[in-house]
Length: 315
Image 1: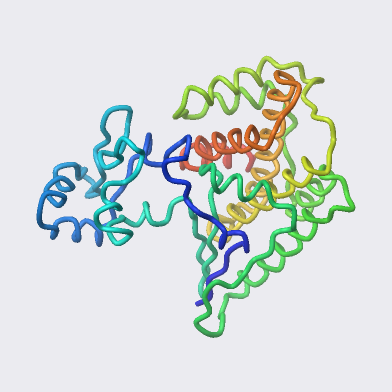
Image 2: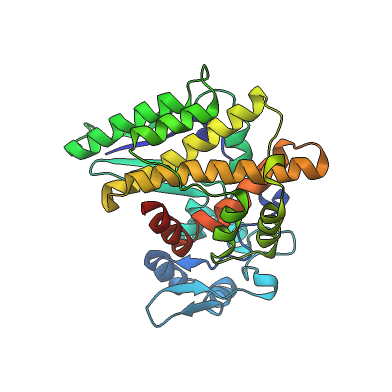
């Protein structure tokens, strides 16, 4: 099997206590079976403390019980992990080791990426100037793929070429990507799309606030002065959504809907950025990273929300 990832993944570093939206706050942290066995074998005060903060549900899934303000019980006052401080990375359960990475699996290939729900990952992705290229991170021999997987990867390479063709306006690139996937977006106003997203499950009140602002915004005002920097940010976003979500069409046969989701996500994020621009008469990278972080956390990391959007886009 070969493992691939965007080249920029090599440069990712967790910013730990400097993170404004710690991934150990507000998220239920599931514990995989192998790590659970390890925790059960630990001696001493830390072992007792870990076991005392684990809940196992009726379905057999174990997770840490969150404390005040939905903080992981091992996140200390400096916003650092007590388990990591004492045991190192071997003390992490799989989800803690992986986050914010996501993985897509093929018959003889694994692809890894970084999720926009992490502000450090978002800043790394959106601040890039160069087009995205996949690098082979591990190579254990020949790559044997099914014919449909090869066809999909060829199609995705063509989509990447289209999305990263900077001789064309970004809107035209998105249209060509949708056409290539026999897809289109439902015709809705910004207010109507805001209503759709407001109907989904929400984790953070701040997300509801920005959607309400989009809902009440003047449609004609939802524009940001065109710039090369903004076009490249939108390009990086589009490539990210395609890379992350189109691979699942091999399992659920929803290529058109997943392509539409990539286009819709870029459109909604752009409109939310336009709302921010109109409020402050300016928008900087940190503002865009934060909007993308909220979008990713609320939409991409909710199976229910993703399914509802894909069902709507499938129609």
